[in-house]
Image 1 (tube, rainbow, N blue to C red):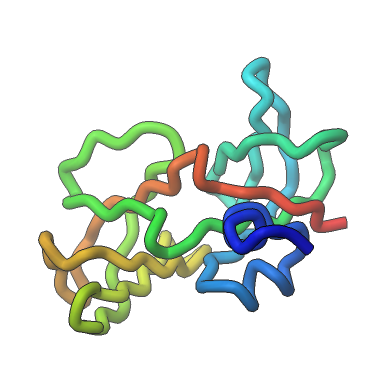
Image 2 (spheres, rainbow, N blue to C red):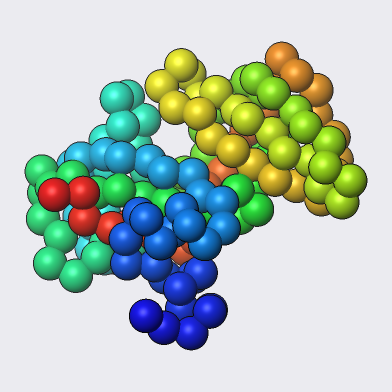
Length: 142
């Protein structure tokens, strides 16, 4: 229960996050918690930093979600930063006012990205994907 903004921005369960809008779901194990209050998740060779939920502990499973319109897409020469991964565009769907991309990150994970179409990418193109830390939300996976 909550306002529409609370339900969309901070759902408390996977069901609500999936029911209200589109989401990428990423499950990982907490490898560490840094001094800035962020959990570092291990994802089979990738590391993802997310704001740590209260009472999170090392070794705990977390389910992270980020909306496709909040994921950033760049050319391969982007220098990146935290939560920036290289991937390959597997699918591209033109939706009129936006483009929906499905990007494979090293065979480990598929991420859905929706852009305004100002910059376009092609199927098979290698790109950089950034999941902004502040837009990643974690729900306990235990």
